[in-house]
Image (cartoon, rainbow, N blue to C red; front, top):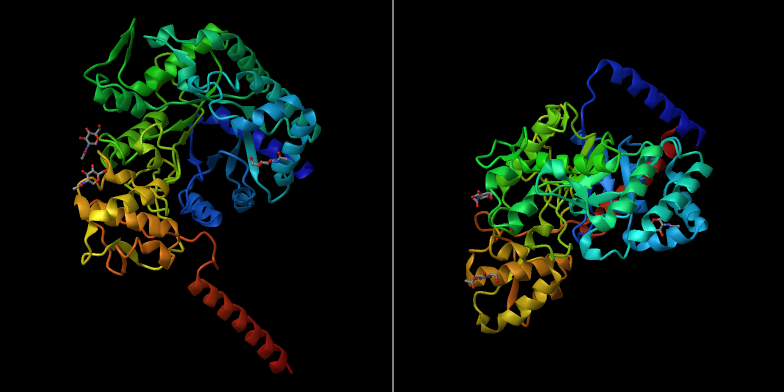
Length: 485
Ligand SMILES: *[C@@H]1O[C@H](CO)[C@@H](O)[C@H](O)[C@H]1NC(C)=O
Ligand SMILES: *[C@@H]1O[C@H](CO)[C@@H](O)[C@H](O)[C@H]1NC(C)=O
Ligand SMILES: *[C@@H]1O[C@H](CO)[C@@H](O)[C@H](O)[C@H]1NC(C)=O
């Protein structure tokens, strides 16, 4: 604990010294979600972060496997508390103590995890939740803050509350205010954040504005200027991001905290599952965003003051996410599920374009497809079942596999299911309609995946390799012993 605090103070004083000489640039981080059945091993993901010089990561829980992999990396981490836990945390200081000791202080050691933020809930004020978490947030924060203070981490680890942009509203940015039913609680929370030196965290999604409204001007979602700028008195907005950001600034100003630092907790663009979710749009948005933020231009209400940090949504695709918001929901990654860059993107971290994950352990190169010698008339039920468990969202309207034909559809569904089942032979049966092939059935932009294994010795081949490795070790030791004079 002492060591960790020491590190904190040193870092703090370095940043104060640097801050007085240099312009402080926004930090570029990523969200690392794990709702995937094709999970890379956490150490491969941490290497991917390091390889791309990504120094800030936001996770949605406190998964010990993920946190162990982050140990010693120096990467700044924001861990999350799921909304469902807010009730118990708000009701009991002892629960908060336990949560902090299990999920924060055990990692706050030399060579541990550089936890800087704890997200208390995830968009707990989302209007869809109809207020069910609302009253728990502040009492949970009070308990957690006391728990942090008890273990001397209150100065280093900051509590924050990532909010959806639906917490505020306005027809023009300068009119921004929090939703009326949230004004009181937001005032209390922002005051709490302010007294602890925490930023306000907001998630901003121009993609959703475009997706949800047919009269949203497309070019206003991006950063190359707009033929439909928003004129707000003497301020002119050329992109949705700035407009949204300043609506929040105005809302904060209205409750007396117009200077509150703002962090963008989630921002990004999906690449599949909807017409405007494609590679070129995602690249244009994310590169435009990064360049805009790093230009330090700021916005009309905060000229020269860009967001403190932005966390891209998302690092990797997650094919087990709910598609309630839309089929694009599983395709937000700047990398595909297996850590391969989807498009060239320069994160502005002095490292050129994205670099792919290394040492990814794939399952063998084989796929399950529809057997061409069978009558596929009865395949639709199998297909439905396969797609109820595995991901078939790319087959739907606006998806990259939407035009591969009926047999292609069936094959795609069979293969998704087969890979989900880690290529278990029985999972490619489908009453004799499926067959395993060693020829990649991918067609054009429609990619038939091969799954990954998330630990080094789970597949038979790797098991044998591990066995050989251990045998070699013993032989070496044996030889050493008997060769030494
Ligand atoms: C630590 O966090 C994990 C993941 O959010 C949670 O499941 C676990 O219950 C937490 N530990 C405690 C003691 O609350
Ligand atoms: C990709 O999305 C953009 C933004 O909506 C759209 O203008 C463009 O036509 C799409 N490109 C393709 C190839 O579908
Ligand atoms: C393939 O499936 C998709 C999604 O259900 C559908 O839109 C498309 O029309 C199908 N193609 C054929 C040829 O049936």
